[in-house]
Image (cartoon, rainbow over all chains, first blue to last red; front, side):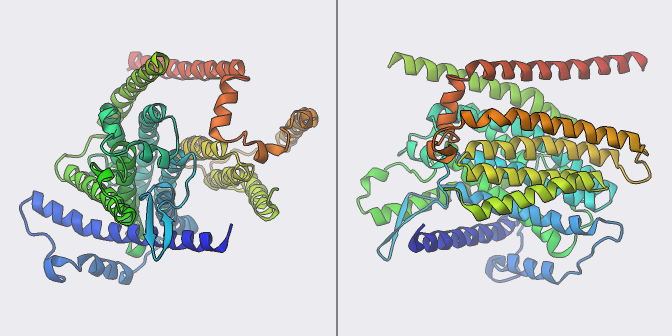
Length: 343
Length: 173
């Protein structure tokens, strides 16, 4: 590997990581503003104009809070838990195509950190690792509420991963590739997968909500039953890491949803733009517009729907989503087979 | 050419964590060590240019099966007081049985070099998902289908056992 490519990739990694953290930070602000809007209140408006400095104030508060480690906890695992949650959340951004090419100072930068030919599996792999952060943290706290949260998180993750995987299989069969770059490239213009996979999208989106532990599936931290769920014993920046990881996961999920079903960086009328520099930036902007929209939908749902009961959650996952996903997969397979034979 | 340094690092982690799995007193630590072993093995697969196997190993073993293990162990809340005392006879028996499995595996792999892909797996790209899929659905379609039937049978069996227990519980209550 030559040095220029290495430097390009390192810069890209740092930029993407920086954008991810920035968006996660401001998602906390957006969440409170959206909640305020939906509940007809003002929301944070004291720090800076429109409360724009609120996330920085929150982060400062988190840093200076006392960092408690319970005496009866497993000390190392207690520290490891939030670290794993944060690490797995940040790793997934590597396989997402953030755009095609951007020209900066005469260089052409490919807007994907790693074009793995099994990109979508890589993301599922790291998402399924994410549950360890919650499980280890919840168990190591040595608190029954935390343990309940950890157990709920693990069973919920496993249940919804199945339906998620099955809905992705339908997309993979349709596009014939596991590479996210290819999947995004095939949805040129407005030829998005959502037109062919509406049911798959609904299943995937529901599962994404559950995988991110977002309401109405936030059973692991369900404060009305479990105090704080898996992070009951956590304080200071360790708690901050858990909360932050959730927002990063939300951002990455939105990016995956946009790439799989909503054309990724493609937008209608993209062939009319002749300047490739402008096109590169517009594609980048189009992807982020879609991501912001889905983050908003995530928040919209959280402040609209009440939380599921635990048995309803399992019922929905196993008895509704998985059969639906299998039916969707079979129909897709039949259509793909039929089309391949007729041409 | 295989890069030596990552290979040594992954092997070191794999062996160290495998030892941790069997020596850790706390079963939860055992499972965590096993997860890291699987990670190191995934690293080996990537070095062999078998990305698909690497990721599937991570999703299925490290991501799903180990979560279930951890799930059960956390519920059981095992510790030193509840650990049943095992006699030395059992330990020696276990060591002999495991040793025999090792001998069998080594014996089975002895002739495996005849079936090696020419130029090594990284040159042929057999581990890439496209080639792997083609091979699985042409040359190895019968074993592949048989193993999928085995999985189906296991699933049906699990559902059946789960259902029967529920009915018995209902009749008792």
